[in-house]
Amino acid sequence: MDEQQLEKIRGGRGFIAALDQSGGSTPDALAAYGIGRDAYSTDEEMFNLMQAMRSRIAQSPAFDGDHILGAILFEDSVHREVGGLPFADYLWSSKRIVPFLKIDRGLAPVTDGVQLMKPIPELDTLLSLGLKKRVFGTKMRSFIRLADGKGIAAIADQQFHVARQILDAGLVPILEPEISIESPEKEAAEGLLKAAILERLGGLAQGQLIMVKLTLPEIDDFYTELVHHPGILRVVALSGGYTREAANARLARNHGVIASFSRALTNGLRATQDDGEFNAILSASIKSIFEASIT
Image (cartoon, rainbow, N blue to C red; front, side, top):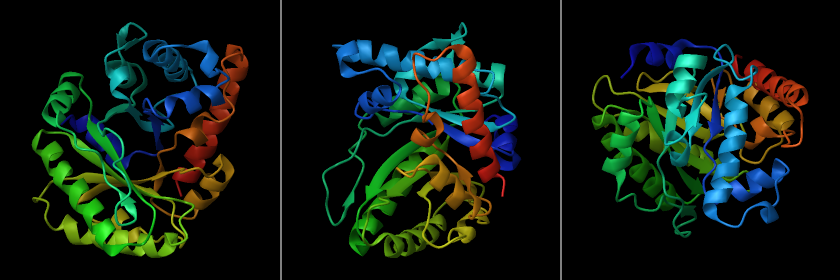
């Protein structure tokens, strides 16, 4: 583990940029960027276009380590270069932004009100890739729709089981048990999830650190116990479909929690914008998310 990166994540002011759109979410991300499905006919062409967008964001002067602590990358991106360097190396050496790798393979069908992660049979290979590409940590997402105690326990068990494998490999895992912002039982689900996380934190070995990425809660400062837990490096929040303004407002009321936004970060960016307009819009977005993250 890189100690400089650890200290940046532990004590730095800023947020985590989520640049990890997968194959399933990439078409919508490109459409929001102004690139329709008629612009590509293969996955390779789609990912090339997505990489061009990510590269433009990463190389923007607005995308800097003074405001951004880390960035989560899709697996395709860590195999590619930005500015003549492997993407993860570029982030750290050129921007002082700590790189993370998304490792999950999508969601399983709904069971007991939740969607577990699909199996990751190649997990060891992914972790080896992460170490080779010099990422600091990983991220994995599951999804909660209802306040079902059995389902949420299964989510927590799976997230912590995989997290222990990641820790053993020498990487820091970001656990992301997202709760749907449209859930009719969102607040109750948050209570069950917090209790499940706190219960399982005791199973970590002394000195092991994880991060958690959570949906912004209904009760302000609801995750304070997690923010101050010695086993949690940082608590980060996903935007989850909230507008940037709504997400920032909620985030600012949750002290010690920082952003890890994707759609809320890139909203307003278009492929047709010249560099001046693109950079100005991205800068305004980054500064607003930064301000909400340092409360």
